[in-house]
Length: 66
Image (cartoon, rainbow, N blue to C red; front, side):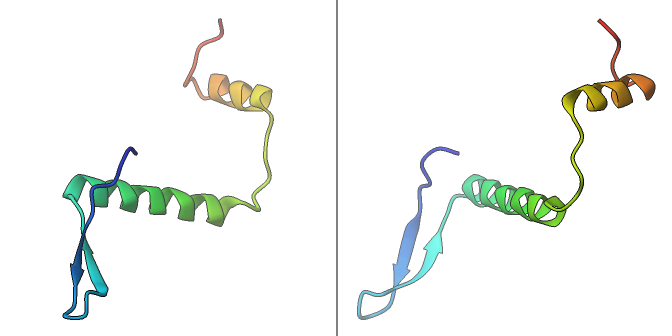
């Protein structure tokens, strides 16, 4: 993602109370959070081998045999 360019809002005592991010950085963070939640939801699903994945994709016509 690169360097996040945040700015902080502070209260009268100088304590950070909020953060200001460029919209693109915010959207990337939201996308990352979504991706992580999908991974967490699916972590207990059974896995398949790469060869099985290729076989299924070929059977569905999504890739061609080399």
